[in-house]
Amino acid sequence: MADGAREGVLIPARHQEVSRVLTRVLVLNLTVAVAKLILGYATGAVSIVSDGFHSLADSTSNIIGLVGLRAARKPPDADHPYGHRKFETLAAGAIFIFLIIAVMEIGRTAVARVGNPIAPDVTWLSFVVMTATLLINLGVVRYEAGRGRALRSELLLADALHTRTDVFATIGVLVSLAGVAAGYPLLDPIAGIAIAILIARTSLEIARDTSGILADRVVIDEVDIRGVVMTVPEVLGCHHIRTRGSLDYVFLDLHVWLPPAMPLTQAHTLSHVVKDRLMARFPQIADAIIHIEPPPANPSN
Image (tube, rainbow, N blue to C red):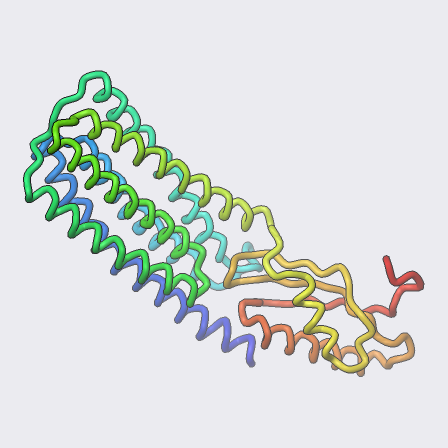
């Protein structure tokens, strides 16, 4: 009953909340992207245009995330007995692809402008618009990262990380605009190149995190799991502890040592006690497979 409640209520509710967060962030990112692109093309500032495409990539990643979540919320079926949660991870990985595309486009434009620097039309409105978008981005990062940690969503955390680079990029644009206003037009394309480097770094971080999930990297430390297991009376030890999955949807399997003379029914009951304690301590565990066995003759095995 507890597992059914978790699968039937908590998981859909979690998906709905992640979707709501992404929808709100999407609206804000689109607003910021449109404002930057209009200003960038109106003033001819390659740094602002680059930052606008960066924000547009944020919006695209939000849309990809929403699509991924729709697939991830499907319950387990005959072809996917472990569920569809990795579709969300794949959506986070898709953000990496769009970031690489953004890096290529921004880098190409900025490098071309370095060889032929053109002073953009910088006015007080440029600073007002860019400062306003900076404040919006700061709010988005704080909100999305906070909800990502609360919901244990690698998608929200990856997207917040992406938006965080937009904050640094916008600060760089403001600095370059100040330099252009002071008579240094070369700072405009240099800022564009700096933005491309920031995006590239973020893309590598996202690729590292998503590939770790897809490659079944350890999610919960073995020492922490062993500490919970050993709180159960009559458990003599455990080994072969393995975890995989995403931050919020973990699969665990382990071997638990019980007294050799213990009746099977008692051992079975005790294994459920172990499972219940593990799932109470780590609510992100979707399922735990416990293998019962006597302690080995050589405890180091």
